[in-house]
Image (cartoon, rainbow, N blue to C red; front, side, top):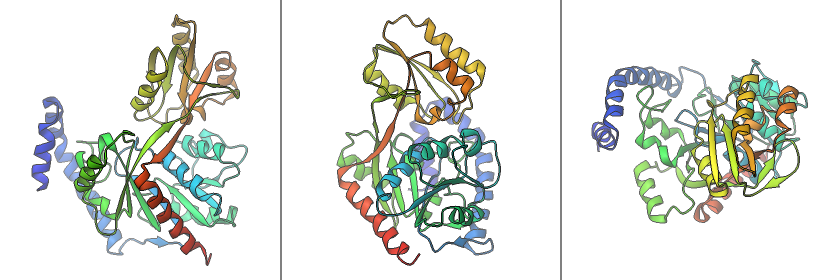
Length: 368
């Protein structure tokens, strides 16, 4: 099937207004694609330098703008490897208020290293976590600060072509697969579909836990993996509600006010609707930095709720930005919780994925 017929097929499944908008924006997407293809050619041809490190490196990235579950998959890799190898994590530190290389320590916050690196650092202390816009410069600094490191997990470096990871993992969300999306601004892809060739592993994330083998096989055919690529499927498992400021848990509240600064909160809302009798959502942009007015709004909405068993729920990522003393002083007066998540692979995929990762790290860390 040609690219043109793919576009036509997807158009037929869309709202007509959205199709018109895509058509209007498509010239800009073509121009953007040209720029990306020239950039990739310069790297592929060797005209732009690519740095290889002798330490095992595993990247987790995507082709789309946000929402594919990179952080939970990084955390999965940490849990998988931490008992056998000394791990470190290197991220860009998106939307932090610092620049350059920063090594996480007890004084770090979401402002200094970014919300997702802060989440990982808080959850897995004393795991070494660092941020740097330039991974090629940041990785040697990280190894200097954590010389015992045997494997580095790179967060969101699929488009960072200046560094060549040992394993390149590409995530694509089940409900918004790159095979059915378009390059920005006509769609949500930040790189054209054909760039998936650089991946060693493709993970279809955020699947329905009941996704059948037949549908998984159909999606594999849709992706058309190259001989060097493996395709796996994962889904999100939600834990018990954890107290944001105190060590308590909850399962089923009566009424819930949910606020979230994530790309797509729908799966969060769907899960909470299974537990609560009534759910109200206050949505913020992805990686949102809360200000005092936001906290006032959240408290006001909560106080307007009439249920006797009402609570406030947020995400694990948002939790990192709610620890400032002035915010904590207000929110801790109310029953506020966060909902932790973990990645789970389907039974047929888990052993194969785990073995592929462990074998790579064991083989390549032996001489480091």
